[in-house]
Amino acid sequence: MLERLAGNDALKRELGTALHSGRLPHAVLLVGEPGCGAGFAARCLAADYLYPAGGPHAEAVLKGEDSECLALRGEGASGQIPVKRVREAREAIQRSALSTDAAGRVLFIYGAQNLNGTQGSSANALLKIIEEPPEGVLFLLTAPSAAVVLPTIRSRCAAYTIAPVPVADCAAHLRAERLPAAAAGELAFLYEGHIGTALKSWNDPPTKAALGMAKTLCGYAAQGDTYRALALLTKYERDKEGFAALLWQLDQLCSAVLRRPAYGAEQCGGLTPDRAARILQVSAATRKAVTGNGNLRLAVAVFAAEAAR
Image 1 (cartoon, rainbow, N blue to C red):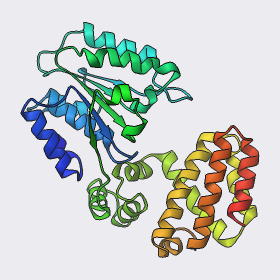
Image 2 (image 1 turned 135 degrees about the vertical axis):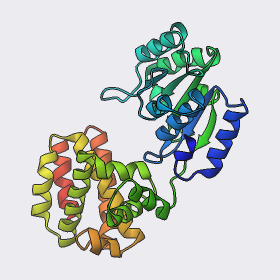
Image 3 (image 1 turned 60 degrees about the vertical axis):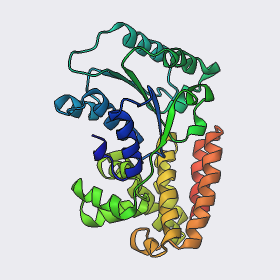
């Protein structure tokens, strides 16, 4: 299944060779920026590990539906992985029997940086089983950077980096996923080859809506229309998560305008590079204020005024 991962040919060869020769480490950390495909790469590797011959069970692994795979993710407002979940997964791995058609069992830890909670209790709970793993268990961790994973966990893993693919390859992949050619080309450029991010912006309604709102806001900023910018942003006065998503999309658009000024005229209502650079500065300051538990309503109003000024 690793061949389904776009690009990253050297990585796929290295992992494939290690797997087929029986030298794959029992704990693998896949590092990549959000949208690069680290999670998908982990599922591909898990499918090849558990079901070398492929088949329906391997396809189920890619969909996150196979019974031999357990997964840990961040939960709640903090996004941390609770120690309770780690202990439950540890017990499930140690006590349950393997099915007859699987070569082992896999534990996914999506966002391993989220083991960094209070006093590292989740990391410590995981460390106990990684240090003395049950036979046949493969640990697959993902993180945006190896540096954000606790050293005690990172040192027990073999780390591999997932890179975004070239823009042209990303566009081709998106077209293969049945996106219109124009949309595929734009999203590949906008997100700089991050296939997962591009697909989410097309298939996930809230993400697609945030991108559309960000484009509209760019147009208002280009026109210096503070009134309409504020009217658009009013809906986020009680939606911190939605506002953060909008700011993120706005950052991507402004960055795209700086890389290719014509994109501002094509997709962002005439936004110029100078205006895009200013919005990026205002966005960074606003994000800092909101993260510091500042007044969200005030932050939204100030951002609208500053972005369109």
